[in-house]
Image (tube, rainbow, N blue to C red; front, side, top):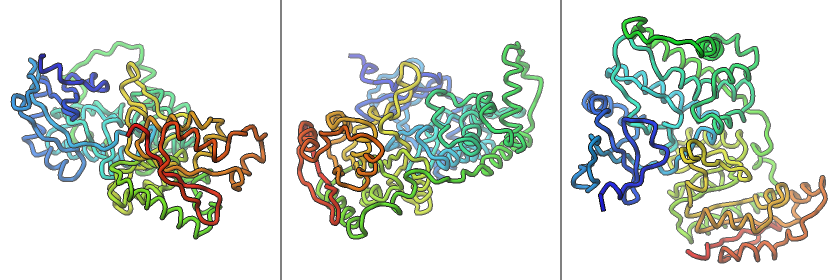
Length: 468
């Protein structure tokens, strides 16, 4: 068999002719094509790569000898590189406000440093940023090109669509508008952003310039033929850097004022007693010590109290929650405490991130990014079953798809939170019982242990998937 057949090209990697990503023996590699030779050599030989890696702004890689690794060289291959592993790939519609803001600032910082080494970013896609050890880092080695004196920043429009515009919408209009990334894979169109922003945003000069006027200019030239003249309009290096400084000031000035949301202060308003809450944390910790997980998803994590029980043990942890304020609070805490093993992300479990883009494969669904070793689902089952009418067999089969071990909490009908849910609707849930819960989950999992939380009726279960 031809050695090239051993590769499995990653579906998201086809738009850039400079390179593509592929799996080889379950590891990720990137083939750099000959067309990118000059730019790559300049990146590596100028010192820019080392500076960016040393400052933890660019994900490092190692060059691999094509012949030694038996990749099967192709005619257009220049280099094969092996990037450092990113534990979990996330997308901007899963980020909190500050995560997107920090990603924007990292992109601009990289651009500013690149100019000093005679290079520039040829694209500024938010998807080129991932979170590693809790902080944003550029993962696309092929985003750099040699800077020609006088050229404008060709990634300017993309930066406005991927970063400045979405941040302005989240700040001025509604925090949930980052979900527009699900629809517009190359960033939110500036004309749409301009139409959704309130009039007062026009009074802010940077937003008026980079969004409203920019959108108007795009509309004006949309149907006009423009001849490219490389000897025409030039942008001085000083003006180039001035643009980057102005964009950075615009991004830094955007601050989201957290409003009260349903779950942002959950732990201050929980119906657990102090002793019960401490007991719950101890049981979760004991379960984690028993199963010795390598990776974990905490679903319905709120601000991440239980996520950090796992991450503090060195377990790579994704802390999912539906509430933007809770995810924001968790992320800021992680940055403040320099936490390495926990990544807070937005997730609506009843409508999780789908596969989007060309052939629905450019951006993976949440399920496709699994499975994980362990899932924690605490104080969640009653929201799924009663608020969203999900039967236990649907819930259990979903968890079966995404984990090997499951730590899940059953909240009975006698619990005050369930009673509050049922106070405004008819009780149409005769099967919402502990026995039926156990019977349905036992079809997919072996129940290894269960503990009643002190001073409550809630029960914590440790389950293991049947085929593990």
